[in-house]
Amino acid sequence: MSQTAPASASSAPTTRERLFTGIQPSGASHLGNYLGAQQNYVALQDRYESIYGIVDYHALTTVHDGETLRSLTHEMVLDMLAVGLDPDRCAIVRQSDLPEHAELCWIFDTVVPVSWVERNPTYKAALAEGKENSAGLLNYPVLQAADIVIYKATVVPVGKDQDAHLELSREIVRAFNRRYGEIFPEPRAAYTDAPIVMGTDGTRKMGKSAGNTIPIFAEPDEIRRLVMSMVTDPQRIKRTDPGRPEVCNVCQLHRFFGGDYLQIQDGERTARTGCVETKQLLAERIIEFFRPMREQRLRLAADARVVEETLGAGRDKVRPILDATMAEVRAAVGIGPRREV
Ligand code: TYM
Image (cartoon, rainbow, N blue to C red; front, side, top):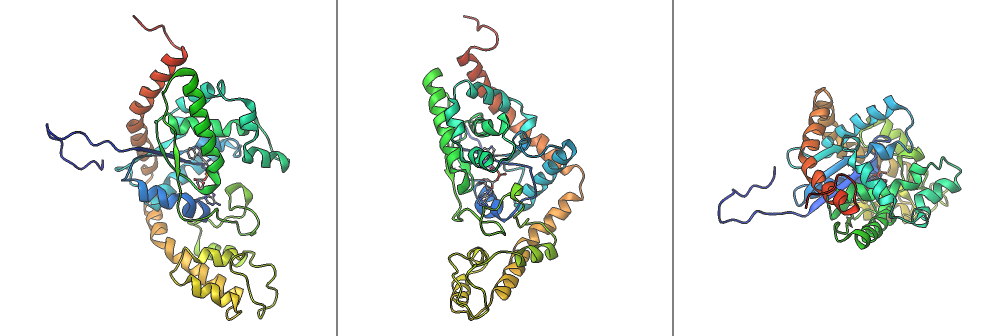
């Protein structure tokens, strides 16, 4: 554990604010996950008492095959370790190992007006696109609120696409506390400096279910293929046409992979450089950036026990925190045995 100060009779125990965040095991980690969130998971793991959830209950809303989900969950633990989370300094947990997340979600469901979940943008978008609209998808942000506050976490590193969900989490906390007393603190988001990362199609956010991602641990040739397929400035048709780096996704991503991105953007703007070479350079930089993590991931994957050991240690670490919250909640709402007077 990272509380390094030696315990002595005179020193007060140091308490750090608690951090919780979740990532769905619905596909491989991609550039949006990394730039929007995972880099912050790592940067913040020592500053806070940190818990990272592989949220497989959430992924059930989109992954409908049992073996696939189990395998994606396993792979996501390897991703989390490879990007730099250290299970000795944080807890990495599988949401379904702690079914109280779902219990608290149900309790919150009895507090949340239906209109609050119906206005959730992810649900509205799914409806508009004619996708599956299960009650699980409608309730998705309620489970997310439960994930966070079951640990009384106040800091939530997420990408900026999660803004509406975090706002709803705070509203749920306020509604619950109004009814049952001040049990939960209000969580706040911790963002990286990345905007919402757009997908290779250039029109939608990069997302596991949209099929427009650049997976950070893909084979180098696959990364090259995907970067070369990226949509750039649609108005730049000929090599000699000046480009608009502000609308070109490739130029925007260069910001995160080298200190010379202003020159690169200038090259596009003046047509000094072409889209093909700007893409080739980006692909090589992405591959180089993730190379050490990729190598670490291969080493980790070779040890068949590492994933379940990580999850077992995480579960043991968080269980007392979650048990304490649930005892308080059950007592407040009136479920479970009558308390002795
Ligand atoms: P998920 O798995 O979709 O994404 C995991 C994290 O990656 C961020 N992210 C992005 N950031 C910028 N640009 C993108 N294109 C992009 N795509 C993904 C997400 O913001 C997220 O931080 N609802 C959550 C899962 C969740 C959760 C929680 C998060 C469940 N319970 C409790 C925080 C706290 C999600 O969409 O994950």
